[in-house]
Image 1 (cartoon, rainbow over the protein chains, first blue to last red):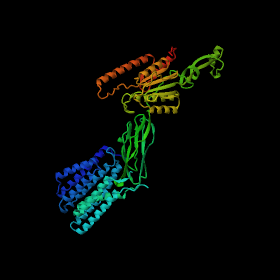
Image 2: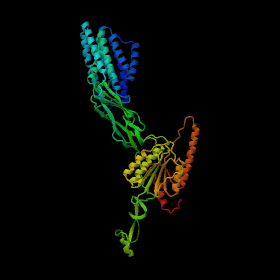
Image 3: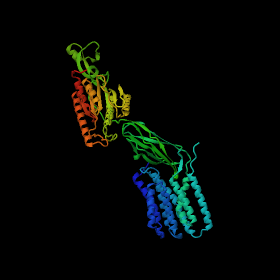
Length: 174
Length: 427
């Protein structure tokens, strides 16, 4: 089994967890809405705490704040900028780095094969992002409001179903 | 009961995907949907690979009995572990047990080697630290455990400390063996030529001398005998710090390892070796020979345990039959043991004391004790001990520090020479 030295890679993974969400927010700068330090610095602090405790709720808060900034920061459809692909990559990178860091104790080495596996997975889930962005840019202003509400409702239902499926405990052995 | 549970990573992805979709649609911000779409995929993939089995986790050592410094593998046994992608192990630290990977923490893919290598660093019974094992499903959606697995036990025999000696045994007494006897017998080493007597074997006739003298003469040879050896280990105290097989050695470490080496050496030479461990239990093993007996000796040594309140009884005696060579491995701090050794030596027994007190040992001082005063007391105790050892040496009982190979050569040669001289012994 090819193994990478634990210490160096653990630090690198945690650095990615701490830096990537802030980078995702800073990527709104090319759109013309750089985040204020009053937002970026607390976000960075939260990201650091997430890096220290990769399984903590801080992860949800950090990712939600980053996405939230993209929702409220850039005005109108300006947010549909190619930089959003980079932001999505940063968010996925932070999430994947946290997953790798949380597999075992801090001193445990993460095998290279596992790192490569998650790198492939990260690239795979990022594949639809440019397509979705392109579709959103094409349909800019053409979306029917009523249809959007129905889609939203379906989305919520789907999300609820997923949540229920996720938290349902496995059946006990007979 | 342990079961598969959603990981924080899945919870994070679910919340982000759900909230993002909702917010994106209700606020009319498609960029949010774009940003959370990878998380939606992560959730979907995690749910698709949700495992359903109930794995059973256990571990097993490849070798339960081994010598200190040797290594073995602690294998994880997984049953009904379909859908497991990653195995995480974290073993608690155990004294005198080294693990690889260091710290006993391991993350590995389920189809890779996920064994821990362990190596005991000190003799005795060793219990490995309890282990926590977590199994993670594909896409890190679900986790089983961490399951606690009780630490495995191993029995560690003293390491093979290098020891060899070419010295003759001072008092061979048995019937067969490798040592040259003082008596004539049917050995191979030349002793002399004497006139033929009834019962002599014809093949022993020395024809040249017989022809010259005109009467039959035969060659006599030295008999070859084994020797009875008693190894006495002082487990009444353990002084110094024990750093394991490749660290500092305490007095008991030295005694146990030296005893094991001496026993191995003498058993290999065909001698009968007995053992007496002076400690909490006065353990005795009668002299015997052979590999099985050697294993019994080493096993007994490995079970040696210290008892802080163990004392030798009044009038303690070594209790060994004549002709036995006695190796006493002790820091010689118990007056009863010193007296017993001196008495045995005066009675004509061949006693060798191997001093196991580490040279730079310092007394641990209890809190609230004046360190200067304690240091002074220890110095006085050591002076007293040195004086006792000098007196012991004066009675003819050599005292030597353990230095590995050849430690006892010189003293055994001297004892062998002395054994051939006529002596007056006190009874």
